[in-house]
Structure formats: structure tokens, C-alpha cells
Length: 129
Image (cartoon, rainbow, N blue to C red):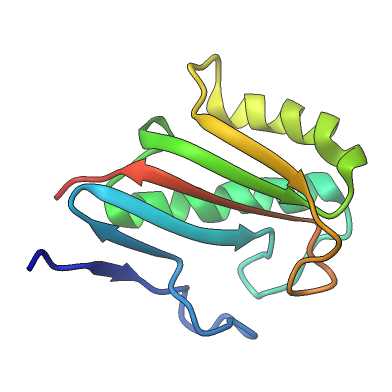
């Protein structure tokens, strides 16, 4: 049976639920929903600060797995306020560049696991075996 590689959250990060940040199997990286927390587990109050942290956290996970933003196949975005979609698209475009962009779904949700969270992003990407 092919092994599964697990990528846990950074050590010492407070309040992490029982999950890993990503798993890799057969050249595919499955990234859990990542919030916009900073290195100490805090959250910026503004949406832009949180989404920029999400991408910083995502890049760190991809890097640990040997992948990059260009390896992302699909993205799921959860927002607690649909009015943030315009700002999300602007920052998303900055983060991914001129494209092509991965397949994506964006949804508004009533709440995320921590009431301070305004956004969560999960994705699937290629990764080296």
C-alpha cells in the first residue's frame, strides 16, 4: 500500500483542532482548510490581513511538501461575509498572478470554527512523490 505523508501544524500554535495541515498521497497534496492566523495563533481584525495570512500559511504548507502555488489544482474558499468577495478576488489575483488560475469554488458560510475567522481556504495540489 502506498504511504501517506502527513504535514502537521507548526509546533506551539495554540488552539489547533485534531487535524494535520495537509496529507500527500500518490503525488497529490490535500491541504486542510487554513485560517488567517498569524505565527502566534492570533487573527488580524481586517479581512485583508486574514487572507494575506492564509496565503502565507498556504505557501508554508506547500513549501514543506515541495510544491508551489503553480501546483495548485483546485481551491475552496469559505467566507463569513459575502461582501468580502471583491477584496478576496483582488488579493487572490495578486497571489496567483496572471493565471491560469486553479479551479475554484467560493461560498459564504454562517460561521467558521473560531468566531474571529473571516476566511478559510483549502486546496488540492500536485506534489513530488
